[in-house]
Image (cartoon, rainbow over all chains, first blue to last red; front, side, top):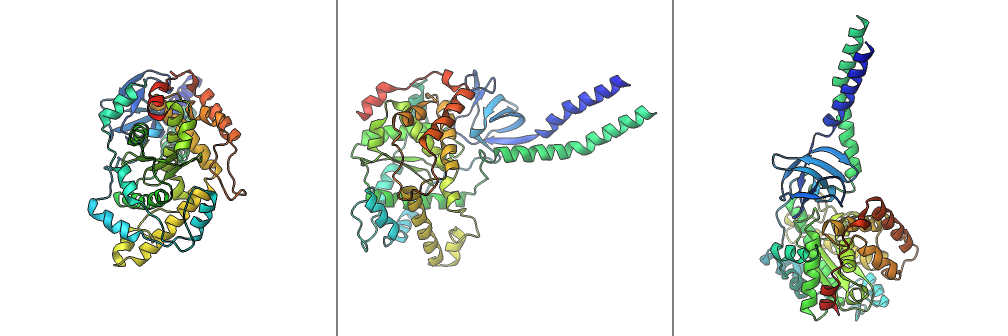
Length: 157
Length: 277
């Protein structure tokens, strides 16, 4: 009788955690290594593709033990979300002119105050707000392929 | 007989309680992960965030120009984009600008725009320290700190939404709401600063990001230790800001607790010197 009770109690304790962690997350990062153990120093076993659905079997702090038909291991939760990743989002060229027209504003009090700090220069009370969209576009135009980025990081490893 | 009844009751409890425990555990998991996992965002909301970020960035650049060094710009963008590969917001096209300024400062703008002054880069000893600063700023964006502080959700019911723009035709309401949002954002980024909890979260997430990308996880810690004056100038001293020592204490705890100090401490000093000095 006692043995039966103990066995039942153990069964309950074993079943509940598995039931509790039936949850799916999706890889949202471009790079998503799986680790052998929930430890940054552990061996990386594989990389998982962006968009992959992973079943969460267990959580330990920020680490998730995950499973999919092709992958299993531990993943750091910074790289996953409850929903699938969005497509890369950008502003279409035709919209840029409209945005820039809407953006012409008069300066407000805060900019004048910020100017007094030294970070913002040459802003007087009623001067037209200085907006530099060409500089924004210059930064947006800096394209670096994933291969280049991986090579760049590869030099670090 | 009694045993059978007892067994039956236990089994009944298991089947009745398990879903509840599962939901409770899931809720607990969701609550624990709330700080780390963002809500799903629609394409339109992200587009609005980017439009908003472009305008804030255009204002910043209108006042403080980029350095005239395309090699340095490309280097910083390569480093920043490489770090961003490990975040959950890869729908954004992160862009990094180096401002021609002698102030120590770095700014994260919603939509994925990050600015760092040349003076700040000059204070870094190696690439891992620069990576640490960029990882910190990236984390402000991925965790939505500015948007949350300004209560900007860009959802359908807010004035700053595509729906409002369409409905109002010339979108006066949208234009006004966007202007006000941009004004507040600039004030927050240049004047008020982030909340203590947000700065500490960016330090924490940035440290993990450094580690995942293969950099010395102590990069940011080393930079802040050597540059305790690295605090964006604030004109509102009563606003709560974390002390540098508090930030360093948290980073030390994370590095020690997660065993991150034992990781290969590659700092890419040579490449850094090539582009920066």
